Image 1 (cartoon, helix red, strand yellow):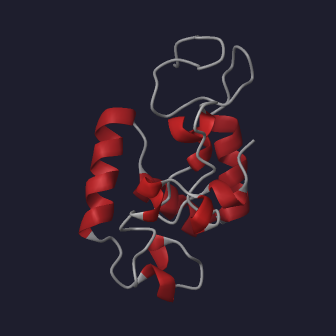
Image 2: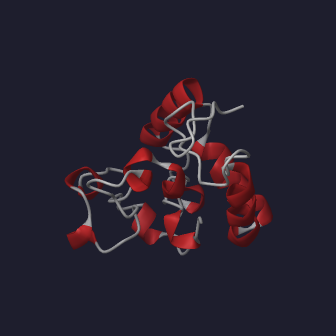
Length: 133
């Protein structure tokens, strides 16, 4: 189940990330204590952005530099490779609020075959191997 703390500052839903869904060397998401994070998360330029730290919400869409070049590049990669947009997620959070966004994500990313969480990085369910539609 996706919770608020699984929505990264960039708009990524960490609950659908392969790093979070895998069993071995599981990542707990971008918002956990930095001492517990993977090195890649500790080095993340978005998560460690000085402008982001000035926002009240902790999301990039409230930053004075939004959308920055790094977020645009990340968004383009995810739109192209995974058919998901960080910037669309951030706009959705802005428009409907975090509560409703999390609720929609919990519906959007559930495998209709087995009911487990789908992975944005795979074209099939990690649990039942059913192809995503």
